Image (cartoon, rainbow, N blue to C red):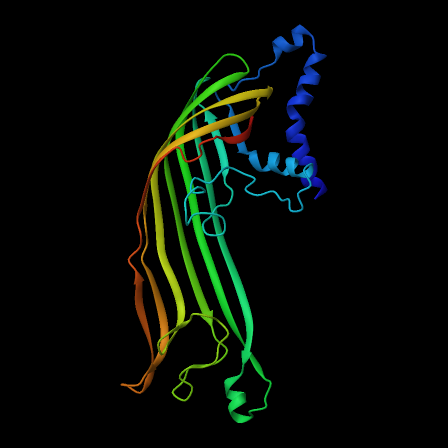
Length: 300
């Protein structure tokens, strides 16, 4: 917690600290400094908004305060169904390489593999059949897996000779997500126990118990343009703000379930697969981050 506080305060106080230092510098020292990025420079950056929010909450009495999305902003963050906890990444890495003093290439890359296991006790049907007073229990498990990635590749042009530059970018977008839910039951489904006890809700589809729910990958494709500014508060260190204009399309993946149940016509336990949804497509165009995203960049 103390480290997070120090980071937040340091970033928020950076412009003041730099101004105080520059006040004591000579004209010769100032003239020799190179503030702006040059040909051959690399850069790495992160979303600064969580730091400013964190620092602000320290002084307004907020009872809940945490750093979220400290990294590059995911290209899918603004979309329904692509928000935190549903698609990777919650953070990503922003990078640049300067081809000339004015032109550079840029990328935003992130990925995530996340799995959550939920366990619960349920009455042991077999033990209860033998002894109705039995308190024996077995365990049901639910495992939810989310996989996803986002990628932006593009170029940028910057204009300005002093410490404030206008930055104009363009690029292509790619993102994907996949969700899978798997169930493991403590009580076996048999000819004698055709509907065993379970504590997991909404897993029965008639006489069939769901074993897996799976969604094929949703694929996100698009193009984007951006306009913003960078203020170089120190040599090769900048604070920036940017607004994007994006056009994108999501190809929704099919969703299906695999279930196990007792087939009375065939007098046996069987497994079957059912298509639940053909997948939903989505189209969007607009200034998705209207108001601007804040960032800190370091060039070297």
